[in-house]
Image (cartoon, rainbow, N blue to C red):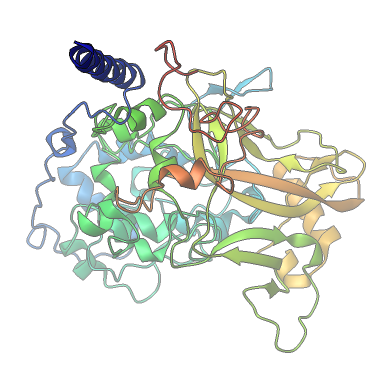
Length: 493
């Protein structure tokens, strides 16, 4: 009898353990797959058809504008479409500027950065990358259709070049007839001509765009490497309007490109991963490193420019024209909350030179439902400011009497102020700055993405306190992982 009772008790105990196990598993959902299907190819546009232009564009062509006139015979609205974009004006649409009581059009044409500092006094050199011909000064006619450069985006020969010192007109020696006959759908070469070498050289500005992206391996970028994407497969262009915004020149989140343009909003077959999507950007896990092969510029100190370098000085670390630099390769990003909008220093804003000025800064925090933890390249600089008026100045660097011609800061700043309209007191110094560049390229597949312990461990890469937490939110005062639900089954916050 006692043996029978014992067997029944053991059996009931076993059932109790199984029941509790089921309840706990249901409450915590430890890695339980939901078997969602992520099928991004179903949401991709089909490739654009190619038209052979070899019989359509015969020439001869005296200059780039002559090619454009020929293009407009069959594409009469193309130039007007280009002229309506920021690629033409270097200004965005009018927007509210956070921290300022103003709506304004801002962009490369009127903003300060902490790389080459500013366009306005240096326009004839900077417009080497403009989608037009001859923008060398304020007299440039933005309404003249033949000033649009069709070839910069549609050349497929790889031989097309622009003159870097004459406002981007066609460089001497380019065979315009041969180039025009081979126009086609833009390739990575066309976009990368400007965007991979921004700031004066390969990999200078962006931590996730450089010359390795022309023909990348899967290790560098899964989309452009393994899948052989062109830029416009994500930047889906309509009527020459190319979606995508750089936080370096914009403050709002309109006209952006997003991972969920193709991918499902919850693409993983694991609830623990999908629960991260509420607070973590896709890029954070899938861009674990930046500047994977080509080192990117991490700092630029203009204050030491103008001195002859010591013999044997590495020109990548010091230049008489530009000052001192640091570079980094295959480096982990920095992480900040970002809701798609940003603060922005506007030309003429007052600064405290004793503090580091953020030229731009991502908006958002842990309480913002629109914000996600995002990976950034942060570029740190030191650049000239007016000691009396307490704002940053834009020097003329290129051309006659520019800093690169005479290495005279006072004259360069005086000439630059004539172009910007900023009053120059005659007294200048140098102050520290930071610029923030969100990362969206050099995407890794799931095998190379961040794993749990890359963030949730004693030496994880996230600074939880800086992100607004008392500590790692995956732990509740112990070293045991906090999973996807509390003991009462409620979702973690």
